[in-house]
Amino acid sequence: MAVTFDSSSNGSASSGTTVTVSHTVASGACLLVGVVSTDAGVTVSSVTYNGSALTAVSGATSSAGTITEHKHYIISNPSTGTNNIVVTMSGTITGTVRVLAASYIGADSTTPVSNAIGDNVEDGLSSPSGAVHGNITPQKANSYLVETVANGSGFALAYRNSQTQRTASGNNTIADKKITTATAQDMGVDWGGLGSGNRCVVVSSIQSKNRSLSVSDSAVKSESMKMLRGRKFRIVDSSVHSEVIEIVKNLWASITKSANTFVNQAKNSSTFSNISKSISSWNNQNKS
Image (cartoon, rainbow, N blue to C red; front, side, top):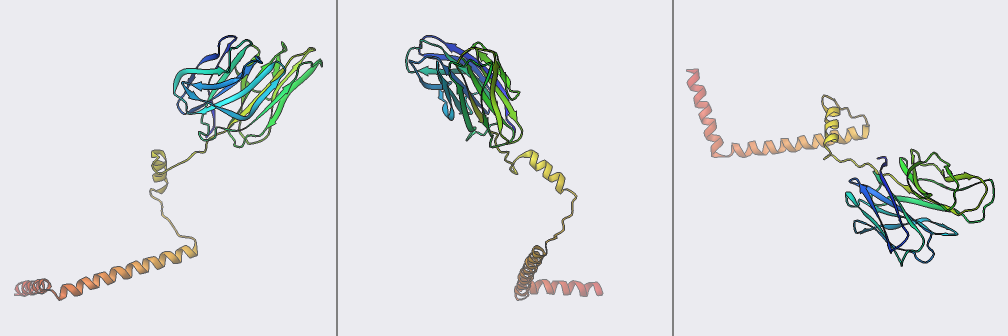
């Protein structure tokens, strides 16, 4: 089953201890939240959606100079509808903490993220162009590669792999790329122009779930009946054919034996004798 985009949201805070963002989730979706902090004095303590905790994605982390924290968090099958994402920091925010979120339908509910990468460029870059990027290979086809970009400069950034930007907070963005085959993809951004600035990217692979079918599925039942109705079946495999013949022989022998036993028992019973006399009498009467 292919993964499909659901919805996105963003928000930020430069004071207090939390960042709250409203996000709408469809039934059966997973929710990915990217957190970007430029506050060296605090770290992320927890991320929740409607009170349920999100889990930090292994490998989905990066930092660069003044971008002190950049991570992804995930939850499968959260509460349906519009609820709040709440990012709680370890203390009072004095810099800026930004939240970039996107939800996806059709992801594997047990392991929604198969793998992740992070890359960064530190302050001090003075070349005409550059890039922050990395290769990531989805473990399954029909997955989504979701990246958040923390851009600490004023440069316009260009996506390297035709990603679709979903939303932005300041110069920070969340974008994705639908992947139809499980092949390596170069994800990230390029920029042009002289100057310095911190930039980092984090990419998570939202993997598709396997389609499971059962005979209780009405659609499967219907299609199966269409295929079976009016069809004749022929056993081709000779070994299977021999086994079937043997089973039929044994079954017929068992039926014959049971029938003979019943007849013999009936012959020896008074009921059978009375029935035979009645039939003989009826025959004699008809003959006369």
